Image (cartoon, rainbow, N blue to C red):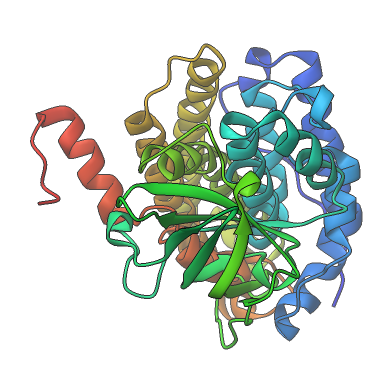
Length: 393
């Protein structure tokens, strides 16, 4: 089923002029990796609902794990615009591949780097950066998704360790992870971050089966049955919801960029198809309704590219707000969802086959539009930001 990846990146407003040579080189490197290693295999893995585990080492070698983490801990020491471009190119290949990198960098390495002890940073970050270890992030629970403060997972102090009990679900990377950054309530009701390691007694990671979306991504549960977690595995630098929410801001940032990669791939596929597919004695790209779809696609992609670029500048300056990132995440998901649907229509019956990437992107985005803040939750975050009134309660 492998076919040649002919992707050409749309840049309708000459945004490349806003990027540095280093940023463009980083983007090109990841794009070439996707064309060589991801595109030829991803349809087959998605059809079989299997995780291409070999990409973990590849992404580590490429520098896609924790690229903004300092070099001394194995990271790339790069700016956030470069990170965004990396996520854009990975998701252009597949949302599940980008999820693997997003979780590793933003949800596992970021909190260890931001809130961990020096010993924790030295022990975990280099192995996570290289891809020797895969990590996952435990926040969502069976009964607490959009409302994480209601979590039931808890820790009790027992001398030199804590006893961890509870469960998490919808956890990307879980079945293959050596390390899990888990959020649990202590006896005072404060939310704490813990680094749980594969092999700790009572810690299991059942795989989630039967997904129609993110089929080439490994998803599972985290189950904790009286797991003894040494006190040195607790993140010392943060208490409360600020910890997990700050991680989600970083991850949502990457998603905002990534989703536009998926949209760009669907647009490029639809444009190419419209110039080749002949009906009524001419290419379908010459018909008004098809041009309308393409014109709307490239307009929304261009607007999102500009929004993401500006968000990257603000992130690098330390001025971006969580609400701004929230808007970009919601926008990126919505744009990708609509572009994928229009592209699927343009391809007709071929649009549902694995010969083209469009249907896979379309199914993947259904997960991306839900995780790390649903579409509706992000709308309410923007609403609260502009009115000052909290609609959550």
